[in-house]
Image (cartoon, helix red, strand yellow):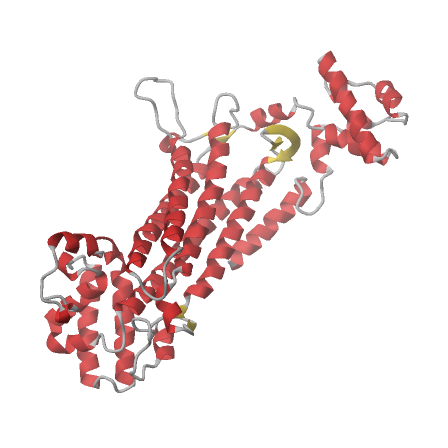
Amino acid sequence: MKLWGGRFNKETDERMNAFHSSIGFDQRLAFQDVRGSIAHAKMLGKTGILLPEEVAIIINGLKSILADLENGKIEFDLDAEDIHMNVETILISRIGLVGKKLHTGRSRNDQVALDLRLYLLESSELINEELKILQKTLVDLAKVNVETIMPGYTHLQRAQPVSLAHHLLAYFEMFRRDRDRLTDSSTRMKVSPLGAGALAGTVFPLDRKMVASELGMEKISRNSMDAVSDRDFVLEMLFNASLIMMHLSRFCEEIILWSSTEWNFIELDDAFSTGSSMMPQKKNPDAAELIRGKTGRVYGDLMGLLTVMKGLPLAYNKDLQEDKEAVFDAIDTVLCSLRVFTPMLSTATFHPEKMKQATEDGFLNATDLADFLVQCGIPFREAHAIVGQAVSHCLNKGVKLEDLSVEELSSWSGVDTSGFKEMITLKNCLNRRKIRGGPAPAAVLKAIQEAEEYLHCC
């Protein structure tokens, strides 16, 4: 008979058993479940709800389960439904009837909410560390590419010259915010729901703060119904995962473009590329493409759980069992993507000469010419129109802006434009953008220094 089967007169149908059981996936919460049970048992002893000798037996039994979990010696039972009932069943089989006292003052509802919080906190730390490794890689690459000129794009059209270092550091900032979000979300995960029971708390004098402290939680939940019925902390993790994947996907899209023959800005290492079964010349950026594709999968995890949650009345509903597979999948996907993306990027070979060559067409210095005219006293909107006409002229003649004569530009603008050629060289276009956060080498070096200081402390 199941541990909850006292009021039932029939065994559960095998089809219902398989449909209802979650042990196939929530066994991943085994370590967290045992940790929570040990803390709960200690508290039951401290408050006098259980005798000291009972607590000692229970904790020793739980520690033996923990040791066997670490050594892969535990076999889970489908009939025990979930990780909580499995652990309790194994405990009772090892220590006898005293094991049945462990569940005093708690429900699987507050138990699973706790397990998930502990799991997500640990997962957040793992993801945060992988993001930090990626940021370190970006800084290392930026250091050697401070003066590597490349086109900056808007609308996927060449726009203005930037440096490869500046481009890479843009992603550094995205991943910095991702890490900030993980840290911020963790503060809302460090709230212990134990003591909420099924939904209405318990009559036993539990020391909820003691349990929270034992588990590294900073607070206890303020409302027993809220504690067991909401999964906003899971959704927040899924949202964070979706944003991380979105940033990785954008980066992968650029790597895919850059590695094409048409761009040829980068070549991926053979270890992170694949070939074609038919075309022997092919070298495909499959790692980047897979990460880009898996992003949609994580979005689906988020949307799936949002849809599950949208119509649930208080308090606990079995629908909430659907939270685990989604978040397990999202975390696995983020971690495996980061663990492939970072070495893929660090082993890639950049082609600075191809990047520089791409800046020589497309009038990337047009804005700088307009700024030069502004410095000559022309209002920006007029300067913009003059340079637009100059670009049109150059297109018709098949020449570049720097090929114009001083006389031509002076006649169109009505001012002396001596020295404009020097002002609109690509190197000057880059070097003059020294504003904080800009692409000039001087500004980028300061950004690299700040990034290193951040990585040192975070």
